Length: 143
Length: 132
Image (cartoon, rainbow over all chains, first blue to last red):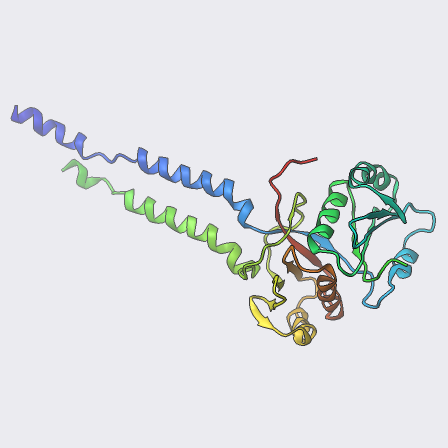
């Protein structure tokens, strides 16, 4: 009996790292899944000029015959695409086709004075998802 | 006796793991200055990676922060100029609360331009809702 017990001793002192590896893997997976929610991302933007009424300057830089994508957000929730009132669904559907035919894929976004920032970011997001290149934020009210 | 010849790697592995996890958590905090709590808008687009940046934060109640230090709007251009003096291509991130007025964000954007910023981004968080 004594001899057998001694022989088993080294076996009993072996490390059991399975649980450690389990916990570590769970932590790593948890971090991988939750990190994107904590780390902020962003959308690159530009502004055409510091002064008000910069729309003319922004359009002059593009080729004259290029398809322009001007989006305007009004205070009352309406969306204007190239001066025409459109619905959100129509805008999302039309933007990829418009941008595909545009040479510089530039989207110019103007707003009224009481538009909430979240709405503008939504529009920028739609534009980027539709393949927009440069996003210009205008400081001007609709003429 | 046999056990004495083996190196006990358990504490080493544990400490190593804790260090790795701490670094993973700390790295974005150290580099991105996104520590002022603000509810940035959600978006599907993710253009910006973690890189050293200048963060201009506009909270819901109208307070303005530059790199997590509160400043007055009149000082913004001057302080941004100092930050951008070394590298105008340093990313300037505008962290606006989703409920602020867009014109206020445009003021910050204009200030960034005035200070000479060449790369600007609006901070967003990942939108986990459906992708259209």
